[in-house]
Length: 586
Image (cartoon, rainbow, N blue to C red; front, top):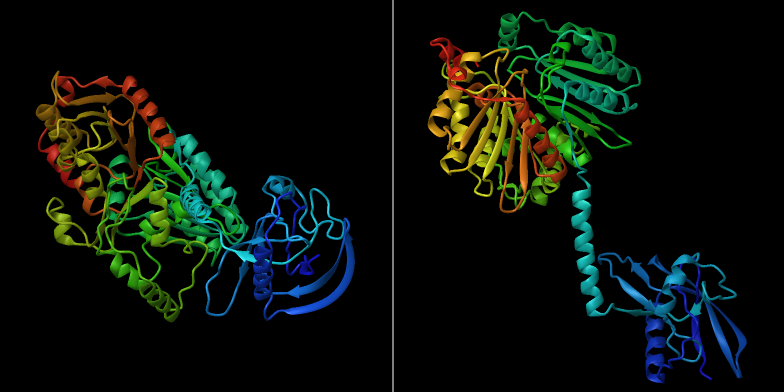
């Protein structure tokens, strides 16, 4: 018989063997295996002991070694993936193959399933059918080419699935009560060390408002950081004066004084129309609620929509959109690139990805300025934005950072300083050749809003537009814009079909569909189809291509259309100069 040196399976070197199969192995291959095993055991600490055993009628001497090597084992006991880390080298994956005492090949694929159910390292002294004998020489054998290709494809598929799983499906919220209940529930689920970002355009008195404020107070008592912002600009003040309503900014000021260092209230002097609540969680999944819903009991009967999103990618992308990047260097570069609104490939940015050098430079800049990544800013980066877009959620925001008197006087020809992405995103959605059917629910529209919708109509595509019959503001401006749309593209055989909803419709929803492929895309947010919304107000819109959301929105819009009435001639009457003044004010 041959004397074969073998390694025992120890916790530091978990080599295993199977029962001897019936296929013999040549002496040359056995000799090569032993040689390769000795190479693999080079420069390791070995403790040798000899013993005589008898296998059948063939006595043999067995050398047992205690081996200590810097390897780790992964996989099942029968196909171990070994990783040996050496300074200056990358990891090398290989598959172990073992030999039996008389040179038989010991790998037995038929028993791999049984071995996976056995505890690794069990019954080393007395091998069984499910946990086999433990002594064999180690041979590092590369994977076959076909298996390497299969593993590479499997890793690519897992990476792709993992990228999509980082953005769970968003949930469509279809009423004011459902939106407020979701906001209160998400704030109540926060714990110490988490962070809440709260921003609305209008915060009016009411029972539902107190529920939201009480949830924020309870969160502050638990040690949750609360950052609240509210529009306190001249625009919202003028709107409240027109409607005879009040604001609860004083409640947020009192909360900041009650919880110093925990609650921070920032009154916005630049018009901020974005509405969102982000719950950044340190130990669980972060969530966000955003859309067109204001807070106040007056808005309960209004028909509106909101979105609940979750996951670090989606929430981080939303935070990046409304707050900007974390460091100043990235902020300057952020203002210079354009966003690709094409959603087939999907949502990739037109700018080049950041290099390692630029990332290191940004990190050094943050350290130099003493900026630390908190639970609310850890995922506020371009990587989260790209990951969210791959998962079917892309955010487009307006971020004005200053006031411009010329733009305020002539909003059609100038805009405030800052970045405004919502208008080009809407134009690209309407001009995208993949979509041939549009359904739009809009609260307020002016001449600039009609120009946004016209690219789809000029392509000969059909459009269904639903507007409120008696909006709370901009009544004549709405009818002036609707008349232009109907006169240009309406009629019995026209592409534009307009409807009036008797309820107060406050939605800003755009659904694009393809008759050829059955695909659809939805844009939901806070931006109205008005000139000041496009170039002066802070806004937040999301473009969503997740079928679960777009199909639900399709059903909700179909219900909205069925509850509305087709526009007649009397619905297109308006008075001047009131309509023009409303357009300028809005």
